[in-house]
Length: 226
Image 1 (cartoon, rainbow, N blue to C red):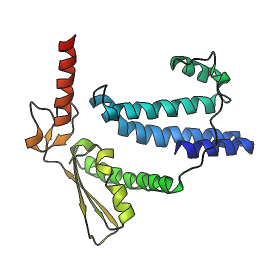
Image 2: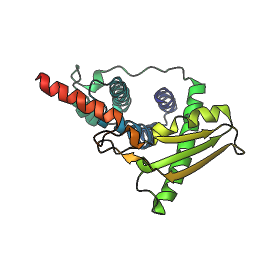
Image 3: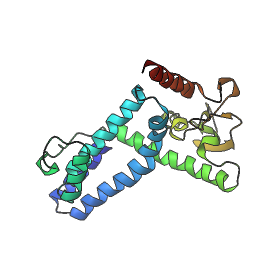
Image 4: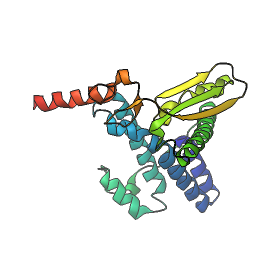
């Protein structure tokens, strides 16, 4: 998606559509980052250990996104980007000395799947919000999510939603009557006191899920080493 935004940004500049270029960036930061990726990745950043591969992968993505945004927006708001670049520990004196990102070939198939994922996620969020307004649940972490999907491509995308919504109970039917259907119920699982996700009671030990218990053991080991 970042490659797609970068290409559209340059296209707007080539056509002297500077407001369109800024709109592309604002939409990317508000929809793709704030409402989607940052919401998705906060569970990983907060709960995984600092040596976790998943956490390092998210940090790497965030750094690359931030680096690209700084370079793209420097012509528009140079002083603000200078301050941001300095906070990043930039090696050069100013972000204005950085080279601009290059135009990239976009994987259209992957981009199509990503847009489908956003659409399907929106449907799930709406279903969760209905149950929240009814008082059945308080957050998406309390959800037991059932998804019925017949189309193979859609099924593949739906399969990712349990992680995206921080839910731990997701069922996919093989041959449903509808293309897709979202059923939201309150999870009967036990809440992990660290990540607040719900799990089967058999997985909870010392009020912690397996991931959080392993993380706590990791940090205890680090403290003992010191």
